[in-house]
Structures are given as C-alpha cells and as structure tokens.
Image (cartoon, rainbow, N blue to C red):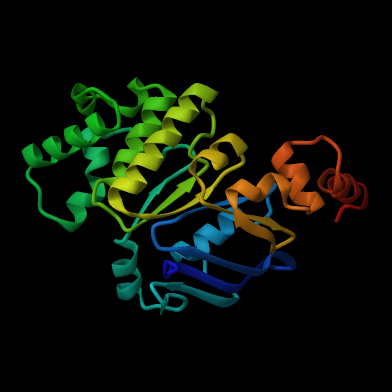
Length: 264
C-alpha cells in the first residue's frame, strides 16, 4: 500500500522573541487524511507552531509546505488563497457574541460565496443538526448556549465551507469528560466525512488517544518524540512518559523547579 503524501510538511522551524528561543528545530509531517496531535507543557511552543503554520507569525527560519508548496514568505494574496483551505476552532470558541449562531457559522462562507440570508440559515441549520443540535439553535446567541454547545457551533463554523485542513486548539478545554468525549466523536466524524487532514493542540490525553493517528511532543523548542498514538504511553522517553501519564514527579517538574530557583 502506498503511503499517503504529506499534506503538511514543517521542516526545521525556528522562532525567537528577543532573547527567548521558543522554537529551535521543529519538524513535523502530517499525511493527507491523517490526524496529528501536538502535545507538550504550557509555553513549549505548540501555539507558536500553529501561528507560524497559519502565517500569523513569521518564522525566523525553516520551511512550511502545504501539498509540497512553500508557504513561508508567501505574498498576502497567495496566503489568503491558501488559508481558504483551512478551518479552525479556537480554545475558547472565539464566537462573535453580537451575531446569532447562523451568522457565526456562515461568517467565512459568506465572505467567499454569495449566500442569501435564507440559504445561509438553511446551511447553518443543516450543519448544527449534523452535530447533534436542534435547528432552532441557529437563532440564539453564543451567550445563550452552554460551553459544550458553543464548542459544537465553533466546529460547525470550522467545517461550513468544507476545508481540506482542520486545526483544533484545545478542543475539549473546559469541558467535563462526557461532553469532551462527545466533541471528540464529532471531530472524528467531521474529519472523516470531509476527508480532511487534522492538526490538534491538546493537553487532554484521553482526547488525544481518541482523535489522533499520530502524536508529536514538543519540549525545549524541539520535537522530542513522534509516533503513532498507540505508542505514546510506551515511548521510552522520560519527559514524554511523565507528560502522558500525568506523573507529579519527573524531569519536567524537576526542570520547572530549577528554572524557578534560577530565574531562567
């Protein structure tokens, strides 16, 4: 069987802020149609990697290719064209509080394609029903919804224009375990239905186990381990082992204590 070609290829990515090195050598590959989860302690560079991928930050060096095409230093026009292929959910939803749900869901879709209000409402209703919500939800506002419902609406917005690549930033953050499991199942179903490639940032190991084909851990600005999600609990690397098992003691906490003492 032929291996899927890489949809996303990140090579030797580096990014500093003043004297602080956040990314020193990040290399990741996500095959088309696969799901990769990036894990690591807070401040390790997960979000910076994602922002570089989206072009929100310019890396100091390195390469980011989508379908083999270099995206670093793209013109604004080419980057905007490339971003139309992405859908994303943000950690805290980032819904527009002043807009009803149907306008939130179809916001980007309406930027790229003319839709009448009626067609937009119909599209939003169809998507929310697919995600287990009642169609009447589209006339409500974000503040009227629970955290789990807001997460579903954020997912609906991300998939509304059928993107090729889906990015998830802590998709189960702030949710109880049952609701988190429901969101994970909806993510899996959406990714498979679209045939999309997915990249997720998460601290939730139960979620990672459910949605990831591959896992990569970032530590000290580098990828210290990557492999199938089935192997992350037996990586043979002490830092990975401590993180995925949630042990209170280990090299990660030893480093944090040392940094606090030395101010480094």
